[in-house]
Image (cartoon, rainbow, N blue to C red; front, side, top):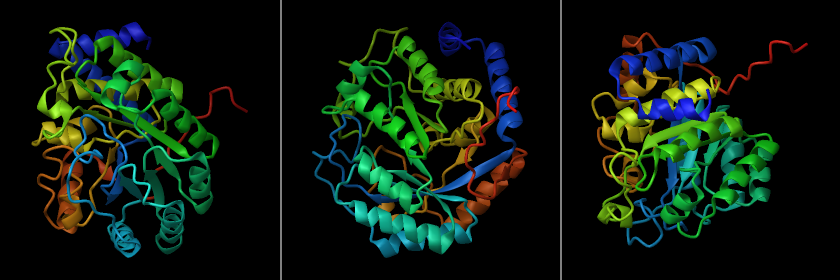
Length: 349
């Protein structure tokens, strides 16, 4: 699929044509990664962040209650994930330099030794030497969303950050032996259809193992939450931050990266509370990330409004509901780490 075809699909409004896209993406998903849905336990271990992104509720300049989970708290969550038969834990935080390299190394080693679970790290831009140490300790994956491949737009929404640095770190992580993940937001103020088509194209160029795609949702107490109008493009040029547009990108990501692991994201469930994640799974996604962060901390990881809505039930109850949802869809929870299964070329020996 070339860039022009991607662009045409992004602008497609005909329901019958879109139904064809959903069927194509779901068929490729079934053929390449199967009907299993990988369950990855999310642990949000800190809401400290040194960055001041214009949309994020834990941006550095906000005066909010901050937390950093203890090593024992993180391990309690990891053991819960093991008991619930999740294959992976995802350690996620703001870009918190208080999470020292040694602390992360200890956590990775303990999780690997004491639970045997796969470990995904999503800790922002860190030194290559730190990534190398964590990989040596046993970390399996590194997730670093680039949000947009448009350098100008990236700088406007993430002041003080550089897109080339972020993409460069992704490439270094792959060289270190990580499975690498990235992804984008759909409907960023100032995001054009052409820009979004480039985003889909770069998924293939980066050969991503994991692709996270969610609608743009700004925290109300941020610059883009207060006033996004000055950033918006004229009608017909601005990409909308809807579940429909987001799942178009999910479906196209499945078509251009057929073997990748693609989550039905929390943000998608935020803009479509009733069926957001289910729609994502119907249109190409194959990963669900239940949040195992203790409730007293989860409410403080307030990156956008509604993120924790409906997540106050006990984790065991939430897992039962999740399994029932998957069963109704003809899907099943996966077992094991759920790494990307790269296909060998047909002419390989």
